[in-house]
Image 1: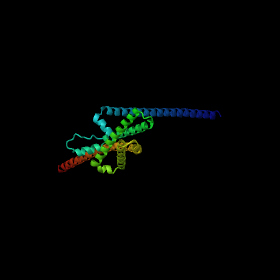
Image 2: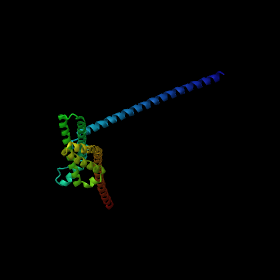
Image 3: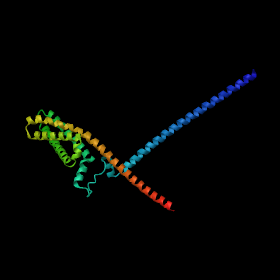
Image 4: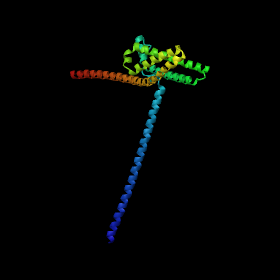
Length: 258
């Protein structure tokens, strides 16, 4: 009995040691796992900070031309004497610079129409100051419409193929022409007629479509410029590979002759 009890006690003692060892081993593994996870998180954070610093350094080291090119796309190179005047005008009409300028003018035009309508609704007492303000915004909006008419005329003359394939451009041109005619009628006729025809000026609010179209075209132009650069780089690499293959084949021929 005493011998069996002694064996049983040794077995229990051994099991307890094994359990203690397993628990310590598990604790050590958990600690190592936690430390490795923390190190990974720290490395990720450091990597993100380094990337952000690199981006900031790139932006700070950019020249004026590179910064504008990153926003508006490739430079127009209008000072190039080898390019004809017609081609220069085409570049301007299709550039992101013009799209951004037109978007700004559209916003100003919409503000002029809004303020003009508000003043007309509030000027029930025929205030001279409000009447002068209304006239100022009316002529300002008409001046912007004249710029839009010139833009449309230039696009029809120089980039007609691109113009006729864009439904948004055609809709935009129709709205501009109707608004322009309406403004002329409003400026030349009396209040009774202009009150009716002036409602057509609301069509100008449809030019907000141009804002969306302008931003869309800006993004498309930027990516087209990047794609062109990548294609040029790829073509240069292909030529370099071909030259290396030719040199390699020549050296192989020389080795064969030896």
